Image 1 (tube, rainbow, N blue to C red):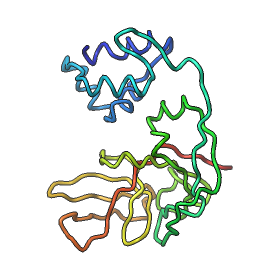
Image 2 (image 1 turned 30 degrees about the horizontal axis):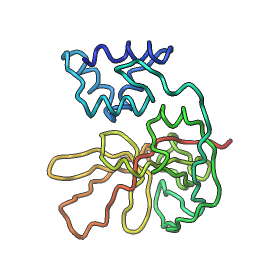
Image 3 (image 1 turned 180 degrees about the horizontal axis):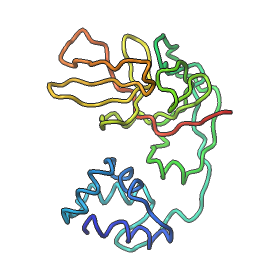
Image 4 (image 1 turned 90 degrees about the vertical axis):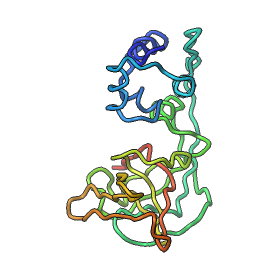
Length: 210
């Protein structure tokens, strides 16, 4: 199957409009990459086919839709952990303080793995207005550690957790970006063994509590 045929086929199986962003999320690509594949008449490989079928809960060969009934998934909330949006330390605690019910269809839509995801609190102002510290909750999928330029990740630096946009640079470097223009971006050199840096997971969803 070719990339250009995927969106129309998904719309037929699911009986609804399917956006290019959904296809990108299913394939764990950005929209520009998907658009490039469509225009180049590229074929979908077997791994990409499986990702699409798992994401949409369908069978592309039989055109069967398994996602006919939505249910809630109780996502664990680790209320003792906060992702800093500026600077500060965190309490490293795996204790689940409550559960947040989310529709299974939403989890599929955003491409989050229920088995590897959790929800934590936020604090600080460096990602404003995308994330409002002290008000927004964020869902992290810890199975998604590969960095895609411009996406937001939960990262660990110097025993602190931060929610930041990341960009890969040449020579094994990472640019750490804040959405708030009052906070400067900075570069992490992964070749420096003294640097304490790790990607905990990708931020898949933000809940704004008004």
